[in-house]
Amino acid sequence: MDARTSTILERAADKARRHVGNPARAETLSLTLGRTTAPTPMLFVRYPPCLAMVLRGRKRTLDADSLETEWGPESFLITPVNLPVIARVMEVGEEGDFLSLNWRLDPAVVSEVAGALQRDARTAPPERLGTTTAEIADAVDRLLGLLDAPEDAPVLLPLITRELTLRLMRSDQAPRLHAAAQHAHADSVSIAIDHFSADLARAWTIDDVAALCHISTATLTRRFRDVTGLTPMRYLKRLRLGEARRVLLVDGRSASQAASAVGYLSAAHFSRDYRAAYQVPPTEDMRRLSRG
Image (cartoon, rainbow, N blue to C red):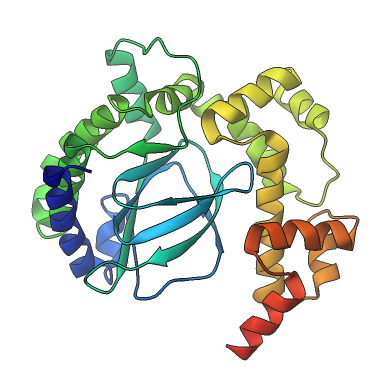
């Protein structure tokens, strides 16, 4: 990352730190700010359609092939639809904390900006992470600046929202945003996600969900990969493992009960998938929590 971009992001991180304890003000800007002062274990988070950035520190994200990708301020993540993410904080920054932000994408603005631009000729899905540019960093910094000047937000927020969307459209993640804009509110990916979320325990097949979306399995799979980087069945697995961990650690139910609640028929299969995602078997995860 070049010196200019790094300097801008340091300035943005300072603004985020001042307001991380005021989620209500951040929410008025469609922002969610995060801060921790120590590394974390693997955690499940379900991102809404958003831009996710690390302002300080580094994290690792589990990708579609269960491989971890480490990233920090030099990269960003676009999630055009609700995306289950398994990640952990690896390092805090020089100031002793890890700072991040999620900025909710506005589908109407994405469609508006996409319609005003010439469509990128590339058809292959982009890399999972985008490259943070000085222009993106500058728009984010000015967005965070509205936390200090909420009285200016009614005038400046719509302008900065369109500018930041434009900068993202000009980035290497443009195809992912175009995919979201193209299918907008009736997107088959969103329909499939809604069906999965409503009935995690169902013995889903790719044919089942494609039929509910009224498209072929090949089209559904391609659209899922374009938008989320995952196949429909891998996406479903992420949802199931995230809910299973909640059932284990929040509801206090057994591993077998958690497995059954999210549709696993085999306890061994569940334990294997859980360990691949969270790097610890479900029973040990429960013991570790109780010890903590």
